[in-house]
Image: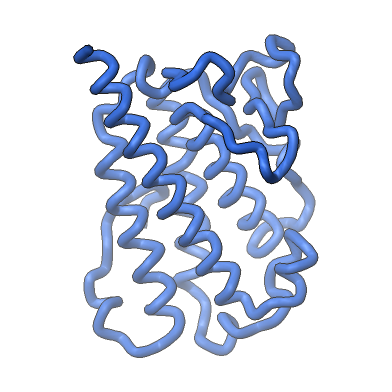
Length: 198
């Protein structure tokens, strides 16, 4: 499987094992979001549904907290209850962060954190490519596990919760992140088209 490939193994849906269940949900969710990202323009990617919406910006060009390495960074919420709103660019950067950091602390060197990863990109093409790579690497790691490995407690060391939970719970959590934020991206694209038509 090439990184970012939306290809989906439909046979997964016929296999009664935990790896197939979580991989099937992950793969199908990525297939769906990947299709919804097709044709994303830079204007849509960076469009702010409100002037104060969190987005991606050149380093040093915001008064807000930021996350990520590189020339562009993601503005970061003040706390977990910050309701937003966010741009598509921010949502893409957040998903790159979620999948990238969890991959690093599960299948990688257990070294890099959010601020060591390049999360934000100034164009839709670059952002979607980075997301495809992050999701693709995660999928490759997850799909290579055995059912026993899927139940291993502490397989991921990314967070305290990850260290205490069977790995399948983390996979389902990241699947939920993909579905949840993918839905937000889809709604933002609808709102952008509606505002442009008006």
